[in-house]
Image (cartoon, rainbow, N blue to C red; front, side):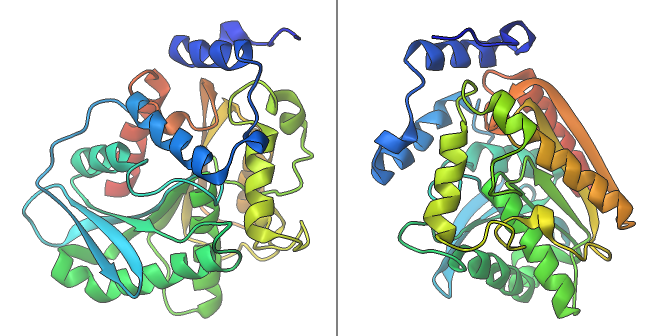
Length: 308
């Protein structure tokens, strides 16, 4: 069993998780059923920290898409966050990200709307992408009655959800009718090839491994070309005109290289873009506020971005 590099550079809580993962033999999702994989993701809720008590939370289903609406205060014309959860296109739901959405609503004093898009392998490309875009149109249609400000909408997501947020903005840009005020991409999945230097460096030991990420791509996209711009948005050609973009990256993430490469592409396309790398953490840290200082800081940072 090879020694894990950089253990001393990890936050204490993250280091403990990584050590436990390695000592267990680096269990691979390739040996799990999809049900086991989804249950495993749900089990991480215990690491998310306290559940914030906010004014109102309710679910509503429109056109077969379920939305969970988090209202922080009893006011109208609130800034709005539309959020797509992570889970590598095959797992995650409204429950896996409930604590984060509550905290964001509380800290940003905003209306947070989480989208429960359909997952692979039951639903393959372009289902999740189409759900994500359709959800935006539904939300805009109902925002006034839900208490949101149609002029202050942020679209965001983590991992596969960050991918969906970006592709949704690219599709909206092509439609030419409307764009959100900004997008927030939290370590988004942008390159299905899995061939970068950081995949090689961090793809085996840091829990969210190359197997986790690539198997998600394969389950959802099947045999589509890896450089298709909606499979790997890193290769999207026309980024000019995208809304202001905030990117959050993790130091020990297989996706670090593609994330920061994409940030540079945004700058080259004259997009107003910002990128912050969180040190001592791995892919998925945004959901680990119960054990991670960086996770708590990132929640605060995202809340600040929403309210700007």
